[in-house]
Amino acid sequence: MNLPLKFVNHNIEDFAIQVTFDPAAGEGNVVYNLSLIKNEDLEFAISVLKDANKTGVSVSGMVRFYKSGEKVADFLIPKGFTGICTMCSITFDGLLIRRGIPINPIGGGVVEIEDRTPIRFTHIILYEHTTIDPLQVLISQKTTSVTNVMRQGSGNILANIREFHMEAEHLVGNVLDELSSSSYSGILEVGMPNRSLLGVPVSPQYVAIAAIGGTNPLAAIRE
Image (cartoon, rainbow, N blue to C red; front, side):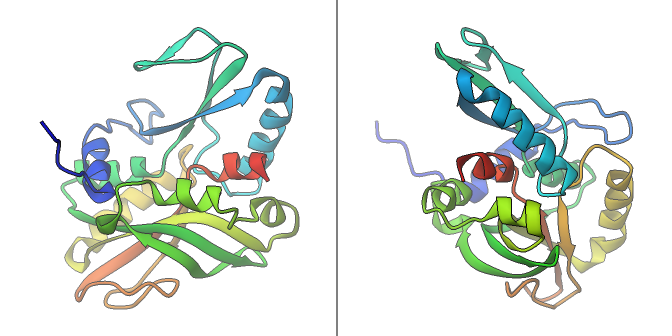
């Protein structure tokens, strides 16, 4: 039997509803990105991860490493590699959903940064029109310059954007307040009702939030 195509916006919802992370306690289930690094490159990768967290281009400083032969869910880390789990920005969507705030994931793309200030999306792939993670596609196309942002404050980083109804603005504000004192640091920019954010239009009576892509540190390692 041929299974129907599943678009990324539906995958995001499936992952988000599994989030149980409590920002105040720093505990619970989060959505993660798993990457493989050759063992001989691990020391370099760790230094990049530290710098990414210090310079604000990562979602969180929380990282977990898996040795060869260990399992992450059903995936076995192959010989000669180390698995690196970093927090995914979908964790934020999960926090909103748990508070009863419906969200509409819009898309993932590349944001231009100038003097550590987000300017605009230069590329974006809409979640409802793709079955492949947009950020993986954009990394493979070498559209980022995350290391430039880390070192000089200007360049291109990975980000994503979602929207919520303006009536829930105060509830979202409560979540953002909780995150401000937690290990989650992935919020890039918060918009205004009925106003586009970083060049991306939003639905009438909706507000957009842009978040840092969880794979930025890995993009920096590849660069």
